[in-house]
Image: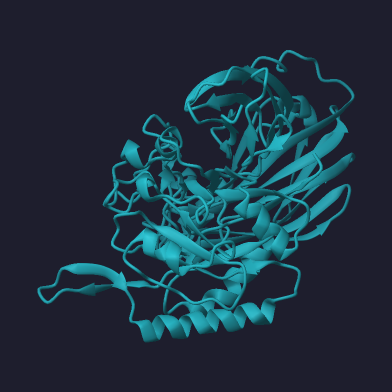
Length: 522
């Protein structure tokens, strides 16, 4: 690999009337990401004369005032080393699907024509992009209309977000979070677009409306030479992108040395080499090579490492997750906890990946042998008792997690300290089982305080209301790091083939690459 992977949430919707949160959204994005693009959401709900709710663009004067405020904010932050792009959501009359418009520079205006064709005519080629999202909804009803797609203005598409998956109608991840918009219709999905000749790269991003950079709603991975704003924007236009559903699976894919998102010409001998490098964050399940919508080859990693005896020094990853806690129906005033803790080893902590779902947490110090942290977990958004960001997996809680990559002797111990209590785990045990710890005595004390009750013939009243932490089962490096090559023979399509990669982890997380297209110019 000669390029660097950079990470972003390319879909953070900040609503009118909430621009006072822009600073905190920016700070959390800077904590979590390598660059960020804000998608201002210039819509509101108004009532018809007879009371029917109508989602509509807010009045022009107000949206332009908000746009200018965002521009001033961007100018203030310009040059601080964290690339930030101005953008907004466009919906039009709904017939072409929703798109987010992002600009390279800070001197552009919003435009809200009725059709995608008019939108493309309004925005400057090469200086702006219009990215489709939740394309799997019904065409004509805010799903993607691939018949009007123009890859010059829309270089890639959001395949997964808080809405769920728009890969295809066969997908095991649903698209049913916003049930009023659903269900999924295959004609708008990404695979339908690709199979009908559309050129589009693939990303995941949040469609987040309560905060930026929420873990679990999707992130964009970008392969770029550096983090200069123009370098990033050009790499985006060239579709050197991929998407992950949750944690940061590193996926580097080339076809005949052409990076994901590229075009190559048909070879004389019709032979092509697929090269894939994956560094997963958990045990890798399989890698699929997909050509023209059909799985051409599957590399299965399950069963290829589990029987190997682990001795001596081992490099491994495990996730530490914190949260859960009192049921808001029982304790409506308790919706936030601050965890102060550390992870310590006699070996070396190589990396810590932050799996954070809301602002407030921080890594205080990262040394080779010890990481100190302060983590904030919540029920509902921002601790106010309201529902958190909707998504297909955890709509009501904001647990926080971290993935630790550690190198240590298999017979050594990992010391986890949380709120003054110490928990020791042998590395060999972490690699064997997960461990769930409930702070049940604290829950019983709360029951005594509030209800004068700390016993029952079963544990439900206390276990169900206990804060918990989980040490997820760890995996050795041989479980999560794979290089795979595959020879692809024969050209299939009349004009162009596309070849893409999909990665599955055993814990259900996924990554999709952008395709490489083979043009029939032989």
